[in-house]
Length: 68
Image (tube, rainbow, N blue to C red; front, side, top):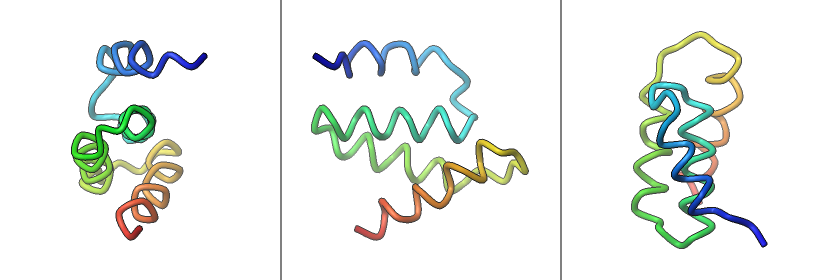
């Protein structure tokens, strides 16, 4: 059994400015069916201007999810 609520609780303690954390949070919200919060997290990923590996990984995923 997957504990998405537990994952959300832990991810909310992490750096909310980190695009990868936001991407993982969005995915967890999608799994529990909270699409508005998932959408908000995806949009927050796209507002990041950080030049980091986390942003390089998260940004294309957020773009893809927002298109579908």
